[in-house]
Length: 253
Image (cartoon, rainbow, N blue to C red; front, top):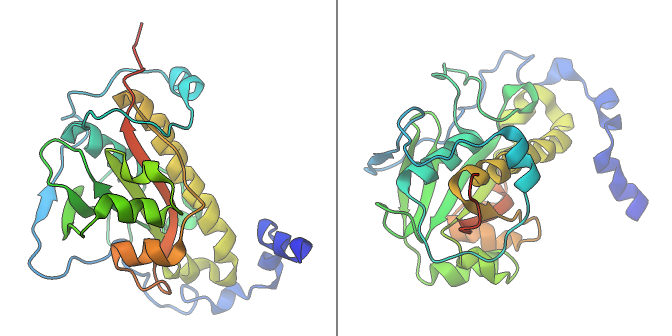
């Protein structure tokens, strides 16, 4: 059984896919690059690149050498500048996107970018506590509400790991597989998983510029996590989590 599951790590499936039958090859338009905003929810604008005032100047070497997993956070909040920077660093656009998307701050197979970013906000200056979704096209947030017992539910979604509810924010990434399947068909599964790693590594490195830390969570309760953010678990479902909080340990010499 174990050896059969290793098939996921290989790319042998690519030889069996009829790429002439993908939705892209058949002439269908690509799926939207971002979930639409329903209802009357106002988009909360975020500070943009060039407007941030609280991001440390740090070299790539320093960011990589200081990267580590952090599970204990201080009670300090993230500033809105810092939070906006982390969102941009993980899923933001490098330039104004077109109808079919554009280049982002992270790589993705075929530039398909199958992820949506949800965030439980506990301590961010200028934002109410609650659940939000990041809108990369607008570089803004939509407020989704504040479920009861949010800290406890975030920890439950992380298989009981308490630091997911003790962070300043917890990133929760979902996959919408159809975005990647439009181009790659049955070969999409592995590349979606690889893409998730690119996103979280950017978060690790970006945290070093805001005196914060994170810890990737791949062991989560699928049903609890999907239920927390209100996705269907079929066409969209949670694939990764990462709590972020202030550490106070970074000082630039």
